[in-house]
Image 1: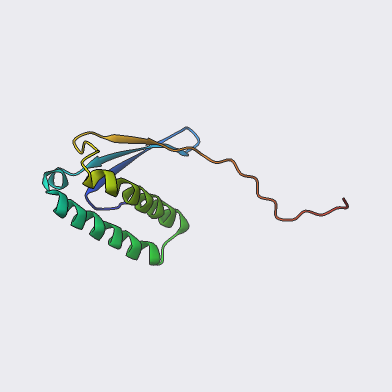
Image 2 (image 1 turned 30 degrees about the vertical axis):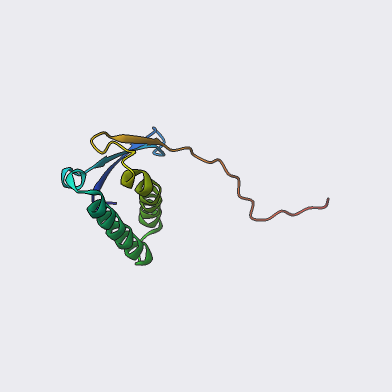
Length: 109
């Protein structure tokens, strides 16, 4: 999955291939923008992600784009408030949920 935009992502995976952390950094051009322009760029980026998510693609790509969309939506307010240092790489740890799915339960209770 290659998502072009103002944010660069690097996935850290465990030996089983599961993502354990996401490293987020911002492009040099984006870091130089004023707050209003950053807002416009990020809102445009979110709109593009939404269009791409609604397009036909495989489930893994869609899940990746949904994750990126969620991250951008969560990061937007603190970015605009100046609470995130855009010159630093932000690392987000990913917790894996362990779920058991049972299709059919049969038997007598």
